[in-house]
Image: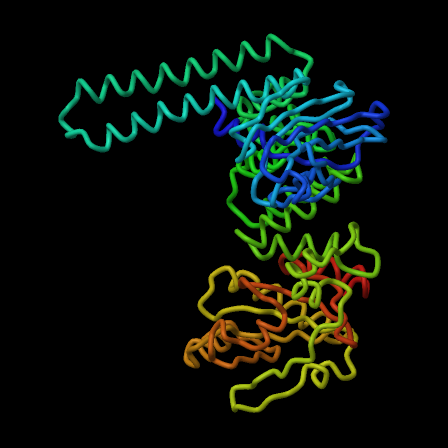
Length: 452
């Protein structure tokens, strides 16, 4: 059953699409007070944001026309009056003319579809959904007031819920059967296939959902498919999410608009929910450098600006490294005369960090003569832990710590969100790579300097 099909069918995305029928027209009649006092805006949504496509000021009789001279690509659109009063519609090349009338506000409560089979399907479904929602609300209200021992009535309420859900699905099936070739029906079918494969892993999800299809992008089902794909992975490590992100971007790459949207959507997801390492990977791989994969809009820059400053190819900040005696040395001084530097962010009590330390010691021993300077930066707050770790592991490369844990100014400057983290820089502090572990670090050094 759809988690929230009404949300699915009422969100909208309109982006580049194949050429549609010429001369499409949307006629709107606003029978409201002073209809000419405000502009009526045709908008499309990209994720949670809505982007204006066109705007028209109604005449004194409330009539206005939107003309799609290049055609309206099939998808979910919105009409907005006074910005906050919005109504959901479907436009597409199958319907060269759409006629709507509104006999009051709010628009969603006063819409009449005069000409458009697609929108009649949509709004019939919305009516069914409102009826279903009212039933669910009444059941929930009664259940919350019942004594927990009122078993018979509780069972009856369960039956009412089941019957209401079955009726809603039956009505939806009838709508699809009535217009099987409609855009409405296609989105519903794809959504059903997506839900059916959600537990069968990412390959199954990708098999039923085409992430490079701009028609699907013009529905919020696209966002749902991205989340479903990520949730279908049995995640046990951050690297799985990083790899999954690369796969999703590759799957969307058949269409430039889909690829651009996928990158920005993943940035939104991981900047909100983490992990930071996966977000940094997306920034490094697709947004950094002089020629990013997609344009860096002001909104995107605001989200990843700090990460861009420490992305691969950027010049890292010349931080001061604090030694155990309280002295501070600029990173540039430590790198003086060296070809490369390795910043190894760790914690002395971190088991995952301990696993990397033998390999880091090997890098120090084998590549030190080739001009590679390993520098440990401990995110510790206890001097005893710091010293004990150096002694028991016989660490020979220099290690630094401010002894304020995650308050480390060096970690903050390099946007470190987890330990261990490895950053490879050159003599000018240009960030060359961010290896996942010492194995990747050694492979990068072999590429740069050859075998030790």
